[in-house]
Image 1 (cartoon, one colour):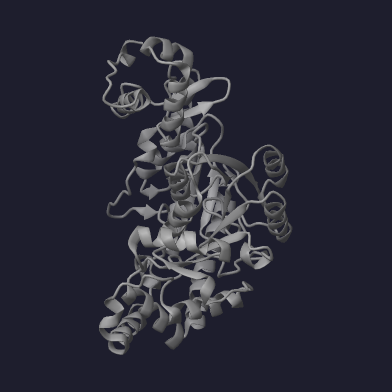
Image 2 (cartoon, rainbow, N blue to C red):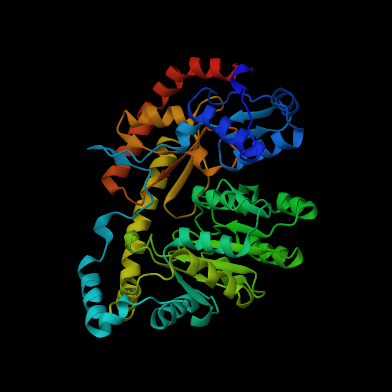
Length: 472
């Protein structure tokens, strides 16, 4: 217990002093990863504070990702190396970690013309602040596109945003208060988890089945807890590639009305059908204005443009508009107008058809090779399209170990711990094929398949030791 010795002062609240102290112990590795922290009562007695103070400290540390809890076992230090792992750039590596489309897919020449059209036709006005919902012309163009996807909307319901991440952030700013409950899929997009936690929300994860979220568990949770918001990716989910059945999409809308909560739909690639029987957005089923719909264009156009939209129920618009204004006032006018001219003056549908073919070729090749080379040794989640494949190592093996092992062979994957709220078992990993060429997909999956047995043999001993190790 000596490492937890702290002289408290009166300059700030006790729980913040203890929080910052323990956080530094974890960051400096004085508390090792997966090491158990003292029980609440024991630490409270040692530090001379009440139990509620330590409860608050542990909750804050958990919200910030420094610790995780196992019911009945206690509180443990998180694996910070995974959380802080930077993108590795090295010549010759095959990137299965990047979700950005490859640069050769970008319509550079046509988009140059669209930028010039914006400059010539709109002049200096495109450099003014736009303090409203965004360019009327662009919102009208996007509303036409959404209506073609069976989303009944118009430009007044649309807010232009600087990418999907900002969309999640401003929705949370507008709606989520400290201790509000947010339901999420498990696993899910890490960027959304970070936003919810930064707002002090209580995150509750609902497992994913092969046809979408587990409705049975969701209903059990709803009978006991009322969420303010539920965050979902119903089509080609990140990281699993799972798509919801039409039944589950309808059921989710029904439950949102019955239990009075909003759904935040993050749609990044439902534009293309792949092998799905129903790639319609959840919003297209929404007759009750329960869905806040975020549409990102980063996977179908150049991600560096940082542009997307939020389609907002009328009763929430003032809150979301304020949150957008407080974030960055407005998305740059040049970006908005060039996007408008590209969609309206160039062959947008032809471009989308071309991108659909490229993505489908990558997806179908990766699916075939994974089924042939990996599925006999790893569990593979059932994907019907998209750019992500989610795989599971046998019990006792770590995706962090596998990340480092396969990196040395020239392939980068993403450990599954990025996609879970609580780090309890890190044997999952994601393969993303958006950036990889067809040759890279062939070579990368081949490298993984050829080296799996070697990984299982070399890491068996250390994982047996680690699984039996207990920290005090």
